[in-house]
Image (cartoon, rainbow, N blue to C red; front, side):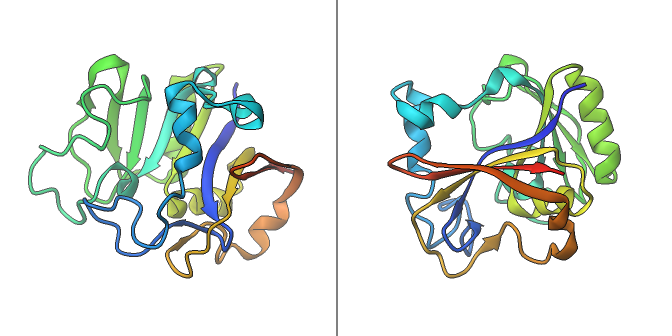
Length: 205
């Protein structure tokens, strides 16, 4: 059985994974411009050094879990089923991707093997479903910050690779806020700097 991991989740220096007022025009909200610029070379194949070494690691993952807010900007009841995510007809996941939501809708099959499965089940149940699909591969908890916090609070994440960008947001969606003693289950085992970000590896004790 593979691990449950967070990989390349990028936060600001003051700990925010997204800014304020997330919306269609600004998927990550205000105040976090350039937060993910360091990842562009990973996607276009021009990354070098440490960033390239850590990479996307896509082949290691057999299932993805994400929150409703990561899937799209629509809140509350779905007005229809026309929204299919930010990624076009062929999303980058290529496996079952579980979307946590209070408003489930039918599964959405996309090109390239991605199927979005919308579920209101408890996070532990969703993880078991993801593990079953992933087999020997890892499960990635992709985000957003609130979803990662839920799994951290429950002690269900084995390893996190966090990228800390040299930016200050001042407000937004914090990654580690309110976790209290739950973080005592984890320890930092490595931190390395590229010219763009600091990569921090955190594992469960």
